[in-house]
Image (cartoon, rainbow, N blue to C red):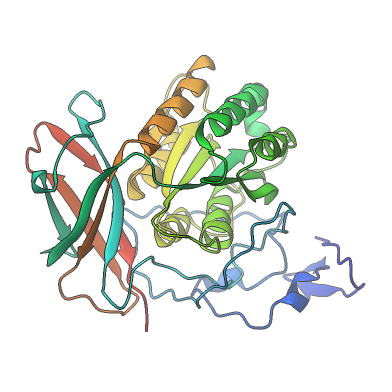
Length: 370
């Protein structure tokens, strides 16, 4: 694999391949995220290679740690993606260490799947790491929080048949969702590697162009793309007050070239506090193994998976996501026995009337390390 270095002709040999990159000269120090040994730091996202992906039943506890980020500047210039195996720098959980305050956004539906937006704090019970929370600091129905949205579009050869229609549906979603000077979004297309076609912006015309630049072809590295989008985009984007983070993932769920596993990509989404909404591009008419992958990712992050087996249903899925992002609850609480040990702590939010209401929220978070 050859990567261009615009500054010099330096060549670096890694994993049996030759690669060029100016990125290594820009990084002064890199702290490990404790990714697997096979993910030794590389200069750019690898374009070849396949690894068997482990399927775990729940997010594994992780001792992964990372340094605090500097605020990432909003720029329309697209930065080259890093290898998901790179030990990048990123602030992980959004927990206020001084007050041990945990912030969670969640959705409530009735038994028919219709969103419910008029419940009160006393209608819920919150358990953190198997213990009732010490104090609810704030509780509110949120319809207007600023959004930070990542649009991840599978551009592999397996989705070629209806790629054009999905592009148009994605553009319409961004036009309807992103508000000028309030929300921001970025666009990543992926086959064997993720490619940023538009960095964070509130300009829907530029987002439109970023989607149209995508062209299908190649293998599928879904887990790498999700890992990269959360670690190198969402976690490095500054937040000015409460913000809702979401990833919209269009894919058939069939990964054959990632260097990280499914559970590692889920962990990174949880660290970024990103809700993942997955829209399947499977057109077979029946759910396949890839659809189960999408369900697992969405469920673990408090999101939802959609399966539009007919092309016209893709736009409907986008519309439902847009509505849901504007009709959620936000709660801040103080957990019991909180420790800054980097451990995964579970979150359970349930309605007191469990027969009538269903709550969707992320399954947990990683405590910070002092």
